[in-house]
Structures are given as structure tokens and as C-alpha cells.
Length: 215
Image 1 (cartoon, rainbow, N blue to C red):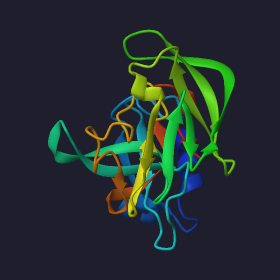
Image 2: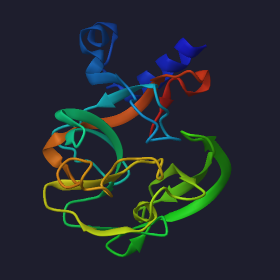
Image 3: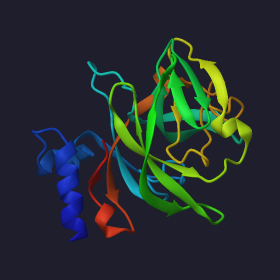
Image 4: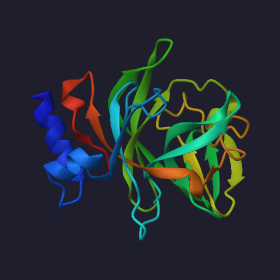
């Protein structure tokens, strides 16, 4: 059953002309990697095998996309591949107030789902549906209390040209653009470092999540 679900998910995100020969050659443009952390829960769980798809020449990343990018960190001289949600575009101003995201003064709405998931170190995070001003919807996780004040109240951040502002969906457990000393170029992600977007969970310990197409 898991193999069938995986195949169905992959077939939904590859080009229409993808066949067995092309898939054997280069996975029809998909690149696979293991999700390294729980920072994107509940959307992507730690240790799940995920599929990345490069943007076409005529495409640009959009707010709400889950992008993959390579960035240097305070912990390593070598670039590390990150998986984060694109929140702020070049030239925009991003701010968090009480855990609510604002871009150029426009708030992202949040609605409770009644669901939760376990977090690292014990406890649980509530699952909320976050909606961008453009209407893009996705799930995020929020624990009862953030680890630091800056987690829920941060900014304003003025996104430089040629850069993006990113957040993890697991809002209280993610190293992202809120922390300039931990990620990339003063916390911002250079456009040129983006290698693609997350399109699917290929395999997971939770069989029901294998083949999950990520919007």
C-alpha cells in the first residue's frame, strides 16, 4: 500500500511526459533528500524522505512555497541545506506580533484546527491553519509558550532586494529569518541560493503520509 501511495504522489508532481526511462535517468527532475529536523512540522516530519523540484526558468518562488536553499550557519563553515516556508519577498517588511505574521502591515490569519502533535523535549504543539493575504493556506504548529520573546514578537525585518524571509512551520522550534545570527545572510535567504521547492513526501514511517503532495 505504501508503494502505491508513493507512486501516486510522485506521478502527481512530475512532468506529463515523465516515463520509466526518464525517471530512471534523473527522477524526472526530482531530487530526493531526508528532512533533517522537525522545524517544518506538522507539514513535514523529521526523517521523512522528501522530493524537491527546481523552479522552471519562467517561474519565481511565491509566498507560501516551501523552498530549499543552501546557507552557511553559525555552526558550520560548509553550506547546509534548509527547508523553510517563504514568507517575505524582496522589498517587503515582515513583523511578528504575538505569533501573528504581518507583511507590509497585512496580517496572516490563523485558525485553530483542534489537532496537535508532540514536540521535541515533550509537550505538544497546537496545529493552526495560517492563511496569507493572497489566500494561500497551510498548517503551522504553536506550543503553549515560545522559548524566547523574539520567537513570537520579532522585527520589523526589511527584506533586501535579491533575498527572501523564511519561517519554519513549527514556529516555536525553528532556526529561521527571525534569528540573523543563525541563518544565511543576516537571516535572509539569497535568491540565488534557492535550489527548488518541496513538492511531496516520498516515504514516511506513517504510511498514510507516503506520497503526500505538498501544496
